[in-house]
Length: 254
Image 1 (cartoon, rainbow, N blue to C red):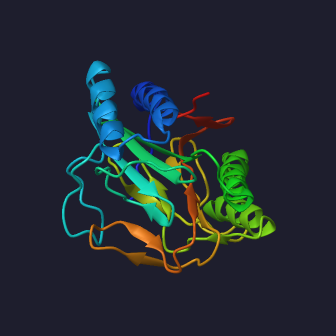
Image 2 (image 1 turned 30 degrees about the horizontal axis):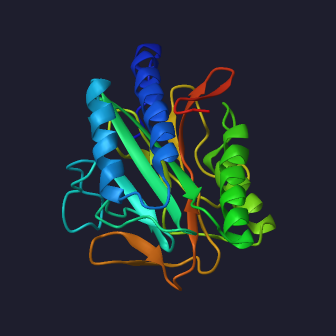
């Protein structure tokens, strides 16, 4: 069931998104060689407490997962696409680190993700990050009333194909706002004009996930997902509100 948000809801979602963007930016600055993933998670919790907000992912059990998630952030390294556990792994030179992060502020949920290359990354890895980030920007450009979910998927897929990379087809974006995951499903591929029409009040978490190699994934024992061929992956995400004259990126940061 699609749940449209009111202007009053947007007031709280803007605060939630602002908190998320500010924290995610600070986490990104801490992603460097020698940092433990567990330290990033602890830092996120500290910043959330100061902002009087809660981690949206903690205690949430995604579809297909064995157990509820027990961290504030998802931290996924290299071939791991999403749902990586922020454990005692120490970040190394040339790692691609993906941080997926959700905020619950007074019952209003936002969601965003970044990918950071550490130190001396390869040209292909840098291009993977750039193309994935660009595909999100292109998708946001088409987010306006009268467009369709298929337009979002097409914008992402078209950008990724031009970059000669591969969409992870079985992982998707989603509605958000009153819960971590809501309808509709947002595929990262599609045809222009297909699927549901975008209307003011929709709040969407748009999140292209892209690999250098396989478009297929495998689920690991810890419930994270990795590329089937072990190739590098990247992930970017923003929470976007559809408004009368276009869209508003709720999780924007510098």
